[in-house]
Each structure stands twice: as structure tokens, then as C-alpha cells.
Length: 428
Image (cartoon, rainbow, N blue to C red; front, side, top):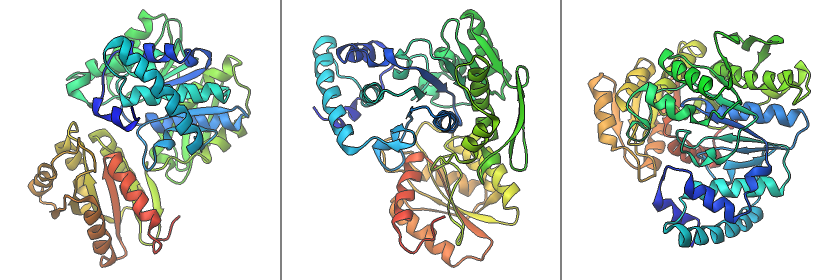
């Protein structure tokens, strides 16, 4: 059995398989301390803020996220460094042996994501990390990461419509799945824009006797020119962020809620300066990432309407005179109609392609949506050829035209690798 062969099993919801697999591995997760993060948009960035803070406090901090952009080892980090090739191969062998045992016991093999989650737990235990920041893969309640006992902190980022064939048709149903990470008598922080999502989270927290901090009640935040101003129990401060910081205001505010809970409980000790340094230095590839200044090129994995809305707002505010060549492609379960509608106001030319993955949406469907809205568009199904065309169009455009690569993170990751390897590109 090879790790790659598990990909064909896709997603299987339920915790029994992961629990059985981990039991064969000695339940490595039981000796770890977790920050658990779910949500629709921004959960990866929230994890990155949390991990950066804990690292700056001097803790050995593990970070497990998905999906990866360019290399599968990106999913496993300690203090910002990827797992080594040697450690990844060794841990994979150990976990695959346990997968064989699991298959013999249950009659089916663990999925690719279940195996990767087990690799993360085994490696973090072996490396004796102090904290693990753990991103939910899909949903929450039945996600493989939810085998952990009560985490020290649970965080739920803004919830939108996604994976409706799996998680439910409504915001309330999807919120119910995300809120499944809330454990009895635990702590949960959340930033929500939709009242129906917050209502579900509040009920789950009440049912679990969990302490809830929600934005607009227990804590408040607003975006500033340089970052985010946060006010809550025992703390109020403007925290500066990186150059695309305003784009991350909600994610930073959610992470700050988790951090301030840890500080008020005496679970971590830090100065405001430590928080500020850790947030300002945080970088999260593929999320409003500027990889070139001349010409101006941005990468952003805004794969749903909410993400596209925030992305559009940011670009209008920061680059009000620019028009954009938008190279885009999505997966099948995404609302491509609303996605296109959000981006149309800034788009000079839409180049539609298909991410290099089986679940890619038919590019013709997305192309037709751009055409319906009167946006000049072209369909190039091969993503490499589409990227070449985008660069050619950018080269002959005026100085107030930029290139935006967005949609699926799989597309963003492939394009990022190609662009960074291209020697003629000025890398920022």
C-alpha cells in the first residue's frame, strides 16, 4: 500500500476509522495540546496567526493544515519549518502499516486525509511539541481531526455556503457541522457575519456548557489602516499586520480571541509586543499573496463567494485605479455563478481554466457565467497554457493592469510554483 493510493478513497465521514487507525499507532494525539480551528473562510490564516504567536512565545509549535499549495509536506510544520523528506517517508511507512491493520479489522482502508492526520499526530508526538494548531479538513463534527479530546481552544471562522452536498443545504446545517468541534466545558471563540450561523454555534456551546466568546459581544474588532483594533477581556490594542493585513482583519481578530483566552487563563505568558511581532511577521502563501510588484501579480485562494467578496473589496481599496486579468478555475462543488458576480466589477479579462484535479469544474460552465455578465473572457482548459496566456496579456497591457490568480487553491498552488520558478519574474 502506498500513501498516494489512498487518494482514490476520497472523503469518508465518521470517526471510527481514524480512531481505529490511531489505536494501532498508540493514540499519539492523546498526549498533545490542541488549538482546533474550523470554518469556511480564513481558518488556515487563523491557524497561521495562532502558530506564529505561540512560536514567538518560545513554544515548540506544530501546525497541521490542508490542502497544500505546492508540496504535501507543507501541511506539517513545526515552528514554521516543513517536515523533512526523511521524517515524512518514515512516518508514512509507520502509518501505512497501521492502515493495513485497520483495513483487516474494519474491511476498508483509511482515506488519504485520515492517514495524513495520523502522520501529523505521530510526528508531533515524536518531536515533543508544546502545542498543536490543528485545522479541520472538511466540516468539523465528523472530520478526522475531531478525534481529539477537548482542545484548549476551539475557534470557528466565518461560515458560508460550501460543500452543500455533504454538509447541508443551509447555513444553519453547515454551522451545525462546524460547531461539532465544540467539546463539553471547553472554550470556543468565533467571528460570524450570519445570524443563523451564530445562533447554531451559541446553542451548541450552551448544550456543551462551553464558554463562548463571539465578536460583537464578548469581544469587538474593527479594521484599521495598518491592521486590526481588538478589544475584549483584559486587552485592547491596535495590532499591525503584514502588507495585506486589512484582508486578514477578521482572521486576526479570531486568533486574538483565542490568544487572549490563553493569556487570561495563565496558559501562556506574553507581552503585547510579542503579539504584535508575531502578527506582523505572519505570512500565509496563496492568500492575498503578492508575488510580483512589476508587473503586479496576486495569488488568492478565494474559492467561494464570501472569499471573492472580501478579495474584491480589498483590491478596490488598495488599487482603486487598477483593472485585473483574472485567471480562475474552481472545483465542482463551488458556487461559480456568485463567485463570478463578485469579481466582475474589477475584471478586465477573465481567463478560465480547470485546476489539475479530478474534482475540477468544467471550465465551459464558468466561462459562460463571465460571458453572461458581459466580461471579456476566454477558455483555456490546460492551466499551464492559461497561465502562459495570462502572462502574455499582462505583458502587453498598460501599467494599471494586474494579474489575479484565484479560485481553487490547487490552481493557485500550481501557478505559484510555475511563477516562482520562472527566472524573469521579480519575486517580492
